[in-house]
Length: 129
Image 1 (cartoon, helix red, strand yellow):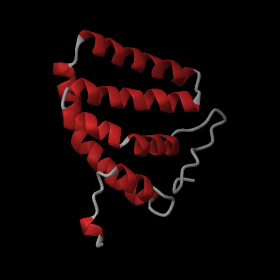
Image 2 (image 1 turned 90 degrees about the horizontal axis):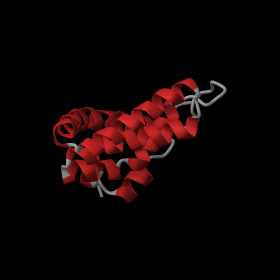
Image 3 (image 1 turned 30 degrees about the horizontal axis):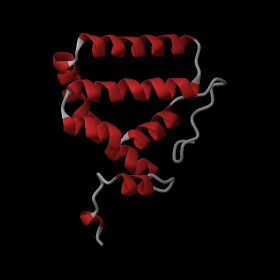
């Protein structure tokens, strides 16, 4: 089947595609998607989010600030992913919420690759050594 016929919104295809050989391409396409979706998700989250959801988002941000002082790489990645996913959930838009779920593995691999661990070494995700 030609690549133009692939369904890149299929979780299994996305997991298969996210390999060392394809990592840079996947991240490049992923960043375009993020740049397209996240501003709208943020806007909707700010206007549609409940006070409880906004408080949770602030708590996640406060934890990230604390983690900047006392860095723990795996916890940082968990909190950063949760923060982004929470914004999509707060949007109230079922399509945006589905994108957050779909891209979970890409977010994790991407954030792992761009963060540093406790001793200052860069992440070891494929393609970003």
